[in-house]
Image (cartoon, rainbow, N blue to C red):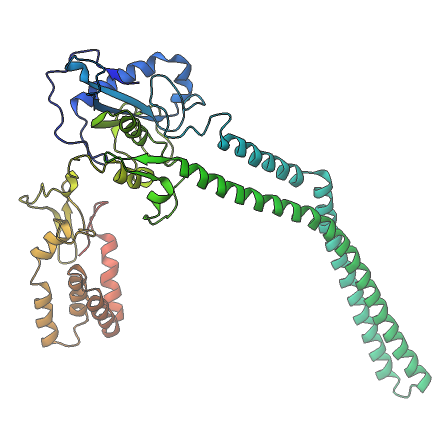
Length: 455
């Protein structure tokens, strides 16, 4: 499974630390390894149609001291991997195997997957069965029919009642027998309506029962499918027992318990780098450097270029790699280095309302959790320290100066005083709603960039 370079590599210095996988420049050894892997991929014509839609591949430079060879140069080699599966399989001789092969025919995953697939088929059969669809349609039609018939009967009751009332008013001296006749007529018509209503209610209940018979069975199957899927996913992720350089083992559920999502996302543990590290640890190979590259067209949900190198994914891989890299000396995250600390910010546009700066690549807009890190936010905070004091003086001279309150609120917001900012902006709006709303509207017509930090 380990590949040794086709060309001499002894002239290339080994990396001092392992690659930081989320932001890196590929080591020359990784570039050479990737080129050999690309050459191999291109030779497999039967994969090209599938790979045209895009797939991530990875290489891991490793060092062996397990006696494979006494040739010092051949102690440095590389492993190769792909994310997910390839050609409907997880196992290919050129690439490292998966951490767990969920596609093995006799494995629990395939067996249970077949059971879940059978449930899906049964659900589709029920949902599309002629009896079910006919019952639903008949229930729908007769419900509308019942509504129309009962509305018509109600209308006739009302008309009959109005006719009786007219008769009473036009003939005030109706005999007792005539009055009784009118009452009997009313009672009979009401009773007839009740019988009609009861008849339709019974009929609709019968039709609903037919439909509910199917609905209950479909819901039961959906519940069973959900429970089986959840149990299968948990059992599957428990099979992914990830190693690290210290020999420690954690399954994916344990790893993701400490994350916000709490459970592993679909496909966790199947990306290239976790596969590569797992194989290296299992075979006593020392990981030296890594790189991942894209092959094929870009997917619809993100931009990828054929042959380009990319960092490991954050969502699925970051929690896993935080565990798997323990015991290795890893490069620092280059984004944490204040590489622009001595560099002045370039101001593109500035007036009394708006400041637009050209943020250097790699410089943070805001510090995030690490409050002491260099960022555009901190630079601007230092650049305009006198803003609040100046607005204080303006408000002291004129306590009804709405614009001063508004702008002091903006300055406080930049300094992290959100409560004070909200209070000042509210005061400015109370003093002069029209003027302050007008000021806010001016920003819509100012020159801007897509990445700006408003003051």
